[in-house]
Amino acid sequence: MIGPTPPPFHGVAVMTGQMISAIDGSGALVAKLDTADRRPLETIGRFDFENVRLGFRHAFELANLLRLHRGASVYFPISQSTWGFMRDALLVLVGIAFRRRVYAHFHGASFQRFYRESPAVMKPFIRFVLRSLTEVWVLTESLRGVFKGLVDSQRIRVVENVIDDPWPAGIDRSDRGDYRLRIVFLGNLLPDKGVDVLLDSLLLIADQASDWSIRIVGKPFSSGHAQLESRVKELVALGVDVRMLGSLHGAEKNDQLEQADIFAYPTRDDGQPLVLLEAMAAGLAIVATRVGGIPDTLADGDCGLIIEPGGADQLAAALLELAADPKLRIKLGESARSRFEANYRPERLERDMAEFVG
Image 1 (spheres, rainbow, N blue to C red):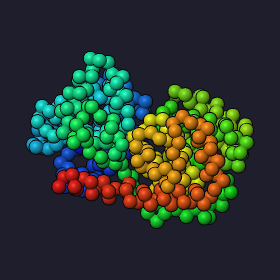
Image 2 (image 1 turned 180 degrees about the vertical axis):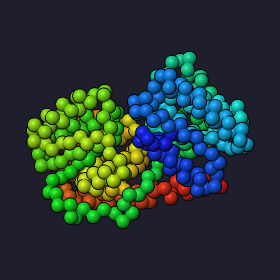
Image 3 (image 1 turned 90 degrees about the vertical axis):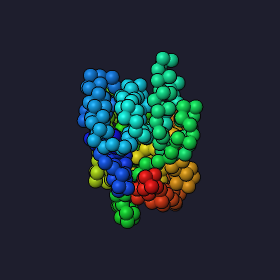
Image 4 (image 1 turned 180 degrees about the horizontal axis):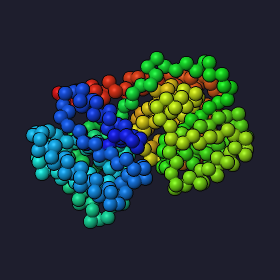
């Protein structure tokens, strides 16, 4: 088992922990190699000396593990960025050298774009690496298509994300004692995550959102953060209660979900975001975008409302619809919670891995 574990906190790192537990529970885990880089998230996939050093160190450590554990297969999450893929290719080459089965888990949705935009001289190498894999695992059924023409369909397996359930008994929101409609956004504040779309949508309907509370939870990044702060100040000046709370984890993050009525996540690029599963676990009415595996995860009109990426006007309309209809919010939230219970708890991943190993 190869992959990063937190900190820093991001989807791949959290899911690596879940995969380790599930494989270990199946009795198949013989060793794990933590590839975490404890530096800030901005360094992930970046070409710098430390990433190069870590890449070669992890390849060397993998070789040592394979010498110790004869016949063991290799599992790792594969990247969709140039330097991240080159690092991952080192691990694949080590696995090939030891004649092992290698399983790559893809947590994104944009491998086709990565391949298309790669230099012509790199494309044969990408195809070679993918041909060398025993299987590629994707997060949802529709994401099988991201490897169309690159990986044979019979070598693609669907292994969806899971999260621990913070609320096994559900959430009682009846005694919240807060008359304001509360909307929450969770996610690292990268441009692709769409927090700017949320703020733009609120600017469109600021006169109707003056009695709402909006909480933005996520790690700020230098790129574009000044523009986000400017939008927030403009909304506050218009009377909208918007607060950027920074990065929260554990009980503090869960508290924001417990206090919310709506989860808004207008991401532009995602696989199967863990924050979406967290909102489903919290029984929230959800508005999210039609990207990656989100439509497979969140049934439109049943568990939430799905809009097109980049559509601030669509998001504004969806938020107004939910704000005006408490019964719809409850219905969507209950359906989301039921879907979470059936599909996205760790027990499901344990069953998947037991079946795979068996």
